[in-house]
Length: 259
Image (cartoon, rainbow, N blue to C red; front, top):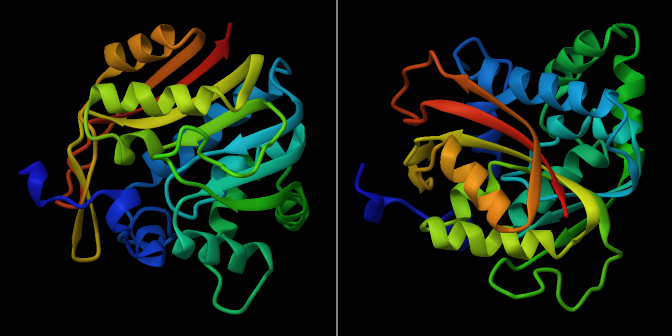
């Protein structure tokens, strides 16, 4: 795939609803359920229920308007703050948070979470708890040194970043630079939970090809250690999906602690 033909997520944007329908829906043709839904939900649930990662504030820095990766977090943090660079993503996310007509249907992901947790009768309770936990959705700018300028947030106890570094980083140096900016939002001893694709170069949203930074497990580990993190856990899932929509070879989950 010629990277010059790909759009940059935070510069060119994409159709937020099309992104959700393609990679996170419950449609029969949605072939990515193991990687985009089940793998993050299972690993985040296991990580949080271990009891080592909890606190007052969690910041989410993830691609698109997805929310399923935050179900486990809302049990362990009082305040969840979501940062988005795109107005379209903010509007799509708020449509679900405010239970507006036409919001994306997430109940299949909620069901996956409650099944993983073992509380199958608490689906509605889980969605209500999520909505009350996500107290702020804030626009950010990844090119600023302080990406939330002019705001000033208290340092977070935890950051979740799912798929975002993949799509905003043009090269490996770029990725380390953005990771450094994310780290500034985290208190010493706080945790960062990263979910990303492995050895990918693009994903397709509608008619658009969106750039993905090609990286492997070794680079992900090196980047985190280089920015002062200690890796506590790393899980990799190789994909069995063959699709023209994206060329990723696997998904990685890393839990790391800031020194």
